[in-house]
Image (cartoon, rainbow, N blue to C red; front, side):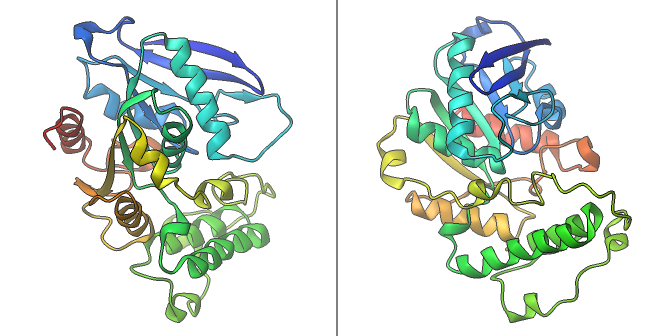
Length: 289
């Protein structure tokens, strides 16, 4: 693996290249992205593609990618511009892309703005609120965990976030009638460290979950787009957004093994079924899944 820094307006973007450039065997570079997760979350998944050149990166303001634009917010359009610059810097032509969570939203924005950059996009569980039939309630639920975070800190905020993202089905009165969860239930600290800059729990990433996909632009793009959903995600928030996004694009969501973090092998304490996940991803990229 080699690590590189791409200096573009507003950020020194750090990325890792696993494998040779130019690629072996004529296959495109396989780019793996998340948001707000950095490159370290893809270590296990990348290891299951030893025959491919895999590129991972830290999004603007996350991990090693240092911002110098004076901003703290994250928007899909800005992140898409960063990815476009990265793909150009690779000099390897259009890429294949696996994008998860907020990274999947960034990837949809990339295909909208730069449709020639990606040949196949596998967008895994994009958390897009406007596609939901209960979008106003989902926005209220999102505001709820932010309020807990602002009042009580990271542990309490993360517990509220987990409660929101693991809720089955639409956000009903029953959901909002629940008491605020105890952080200890999820192994989270109850102490407040005083910081309020977490990109997941603050409103800094709301532009990502507020993103409205341009269905017409995505349909017109030459990119093959596959919306993926975890089989264990059942009827949770990101499963519902995946199914609704796929419907917006005139397709059905493609079922992958495990859950929202199903490709991980213990990174950040989360483990799914990375071997089975990688096998399914390979099938889909090869056009067989």
